[in-house]
Every structure is written in C-alpha cells, then in structure tokens.
Amino acid sequence: MNLNALKNTEELQSFLNGSQAVAFSLLGKKEERYAFIQFSLCQMQLTAHSIGGTCL
Image (cartoon, rainbow, N blue to C red; front, side):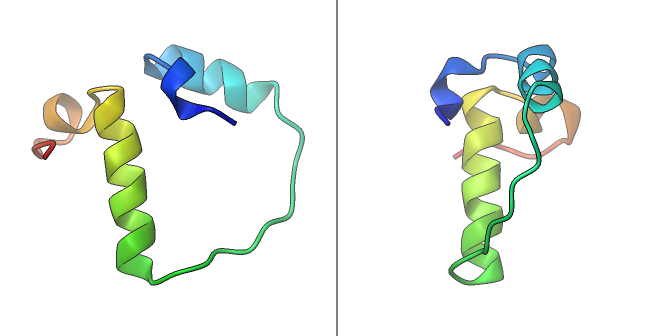
C-alpha cells in the first residue's frame, strides 16, 4: 500500500471499500503508531483543518 497516492478522504474511503480484510500485528509503541497515523493524515492535509491540530 502506498499512502502517497491517496490525496483526500474520498480516495481513502474508496481504497478502504475496495480492500479485503487482512490480519496484521502492530509493532512498536502506541505513541509511534499514532505518530505514523498523524504523519499519514498530514500528508493528505486532514488533521490541521478538520481536527484543529497542526502538522509538523
């Protein structure tokens, strides 16, 4: 999966709707996972506008 190709929430939703269920395990600390999610959302410029946060 390449998150760089997803530019907005509609594309993200379309991707998720077209995906089959997968099993996976999460590595790393909870803070690291949240940082990755925040970074990915910032790439689509979602968090700064819709959640009130800032993208660093």
